Length: 293
Length: 293
Image 1 (cartoon, each protein chain N blue to C red):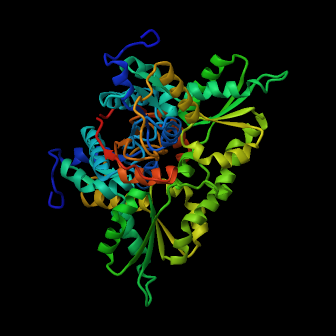
Image 2 (cartoon, rainbow over the protein chains, first blue to last red):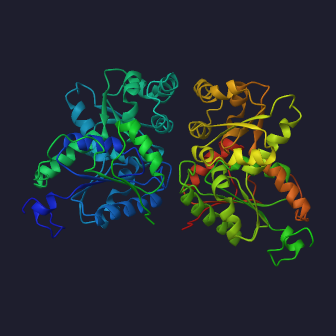
């Protein structure tokens, strides 16, 4: 037990067979679920989408903290071995408070995204400093959380951030190739293109849906960092480190949204299922609407 | 007191000097506030924007009802003579429940918008039935509330409805003339153009911000109906009927958002003030953040 900060009285074997909890303000976190699922096919997941109170990206610190803690406590009460905060806004604003409240390891998306951006661009450094751009919601940008995390990893990195409010509804409409999306991307990313970053962090879980058009807009030289992918990598490392990977191998092929994973939403389950299909190609086999408050 | 359903023990004179209460899920209702303010310059207004729980347009019936009742009770507790439900989604889903709960007259936006659309197109009827199109949020369209109201006013009217989810964020970005907005409007309104309606109801309070591009897209032959304007007309009629117009004339010129009107939001007051300035040209003089639940 040396390498584990035991907050849980369960023995490690029992704990390892528990699911991984994920919450997001809504459907966006499904891109993080997909990344985790692909990387960790022997794990079970419980996903909570707070669709009654989505979006978080335009809300205040106090409100996002309160919502995030309620979500975290709901998942913790179901018995999970690790909590993934898939929502960038909640990761930016509420991680310290969530960690205070629940005795489970918590992994957000900001830190992993920031660290990966720094690591991926380190070898590109010649005479100049690394340049990292971040696109995110208004609340995430205002919080400055990505810039702080990037500077913790690399003091000399130069960071440029901007909000892209229309990207979320465009992703939910599944307008991934439409000329309007191309044109809006050009407008939002104009300054970033001028900045010529080494990497661009997709700092909102919806943005990977628009990955192709974003890559085309900023050019092939810019490395796109999917914070959800980066988060999934760190979750795997943490599970390895704590010897908490599920010891029971799952037989047969796993698919996204199969009945080993349990989805909860706080409202409008039908709409969630529809957008899930757009994002993941299938609807959750187990989807339940719950009341949180 | 013949023409008044007395739910309130105040005498009429005292009641007439009370403000008009308005609530919306967020900033969109400011277009309804503007219409009311322009039409009724001697009235005081209390506006509540439920910015902590915006948007309502993607949420379920039960949730919208609960939020709407909490909003209505907050305003009723401040002493108002009439309640305006500026939010189309709340008007579509929650009006009966609000009326059950509070002893004040309640005016929504759906009924007035529907009735005005029917009235405005009646004289155009030749041999054919009136054709009325409605654009609104997903929840409002699914509720079928506009179609029901239109058919109550005119059984034979033919109604075509469609949701335009990107119009809300486009309005909030204030992209009123951008080519992307023009192009998205073309896409959303294509079927409506083919339908060749006599009138098109702007069934979401954000849409009047995009009025010009919508008019250009559907053509000058289509009469646009602003449900907020229609609502303001019915509110004036009701106040006249009940002799509840404010008897005290306000001295000097009134301006939108001046200190005679009181604005409350449930979250993120700064953002509300910013969008209010985009929509109305000025920020509220009196703006307060409150907790509703």
